[in-house]
Image (cartoon, rainbow, N blue to C red; front, side):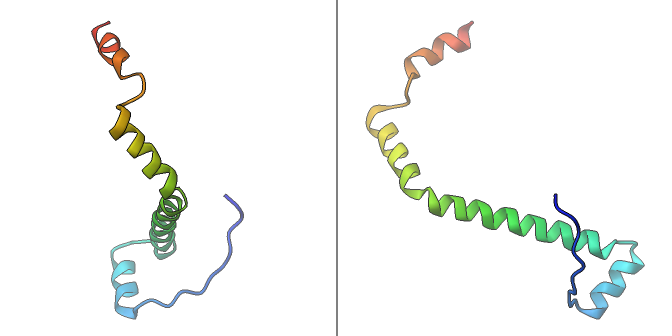
Length: 78
């Protein structure tokens, strides 16, 4: 990960007070929340960008079945 960047974030005062009372590191909690949201958005972006390929693959499987499916039983019996 790249270096750290100081950032100003506005949060409700009572939330920050309660977090401090509970010993929560506000910077770490904000980072964890932002990391989760970025991952979620990246995943959604990837799905949008690859929607056509995913649909095409799904249509193939519906029409033709899973590639190499005939070999699956042998793998599990070994």
